[in-house]
Image (cartoon, rainbow over all chains, first blue to last red; front, side, top):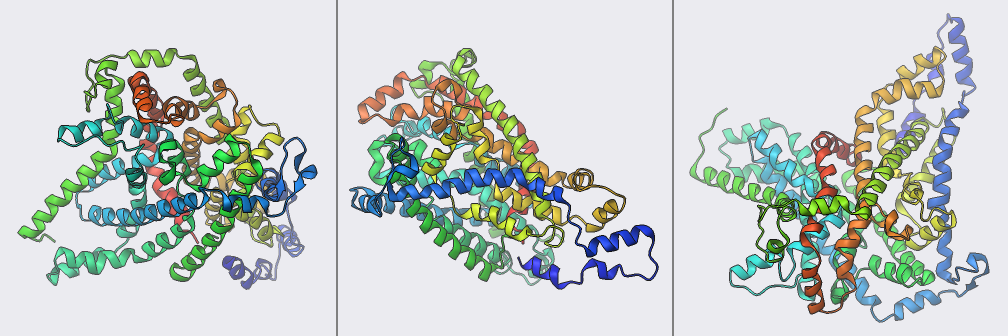
Length: 329
Length: 294
């Protein structure tokens, strides 16, 4: 939007073209730009996307009204009975709903913290590696898990964490420990979620910091070396200040995700044994909505989540704009 | 400038190299472990004797996988949805980003139309209303359920339109002066100059379609129509899902074919690994396009 304002503040091009002698073509252009020649094909180009968005993005938004109905699929939205806030009352009285909200916030908060810190530390350490090829090789390996789906990663985790024949428990028993039932024990399940999430995405998270680090002026490091600064002093006084703006940006923007505890991951790893620590809003509303076909209640749950998330995202974008001068346009 | 390293510096370097090497290995060892299991005998795998190298080497699991009708069908569904999906996504993306990259003077109402798309980044109807719309438009049980609802991605539009804006206006103006239409300007000027951005978005979109499993699960009622990732979920994750107690779970883990699952995981992952070296060149620049714009 700001860009728009700058554009409109500049003189229109037609004024610049007001040269005394005009060729025939230039006259055509001049008069055309005065009339604000608009090519209708531009609107036609927008048509497919506008239709798709109208149906598949705004259609569901309108469909949110079923959160206030006792929705009957046979009768549809028009004939279903309106029940006001009953579905919301039902949810807040639902025995496990509070637990689900707590799990969601707790899991995603832990993930936010770990996902914030690990990429920063790894980037700073990577930056200390001077052999370019070696650095590239490490980067190639740590970016990889990001591109593999949670279905596949879950398959691998289920296999390696298996209590009887998984390699991790094999190692634990080899060193004299007792096998841990990672995916079925409430005391460790949250840990599995946080660690596997960090494992999958920490490498990808370093990309943005690595880009900021390469743009730090190398003269700063040389000047510091001449002043006999040691490595820690250089990291503390040059490297870290160089990435602080990105840290603020990443930190503030990630806050908008506080209610996204990671559906893809949890849904593919959890089971009824760990519902008390692992069940999150998205998995909860999936079971209510798709498994039990209670569309109205699941929609109400989704609506609570969307509303709170919208608030969080707005705050996070506002902070990112204030603190890091970030704009989406 | 060469500076002699002190002992402390040397120790740091050694520790740092070791740590990062271990960290990098940690990222790929799980895949190598699965690869080893997939080429091992069933007995060795269920006895937990396989580490990073196959034990009692055999390709039986792969032979079984490529003979299994459902697996092949799922693989083909994924290839189809990826090809169709990426083509349609890209076409609509280009057609949308181009007009929106114009100024309000060239396209009155541009800002208002942009907001239609931007809003979709922040609010959505959520799972159930979307499910009802997809059912209502009769996409269920067709491949279009995996494609059509997700064609418009506001985030991609933002990336591409910002890229289009960096292209010098003069090029377009001179072409228009020579009588070129807007379609012509888009095809002959904007697209050739946007190949890096388009390559990046194509790669992201391809990986997205390849990895997507959720819509297959909720919109397809028979397994034969599942895309690969949904199918994989069914054989790997779902068996654990409904089991209630530990003994049953352990039993299940024993009888389910560990090596066979590993082989299917590897087959599903190899295409990503195959394009990964080419991707690397682009996704870094793509991520920067996305996150540091404005």
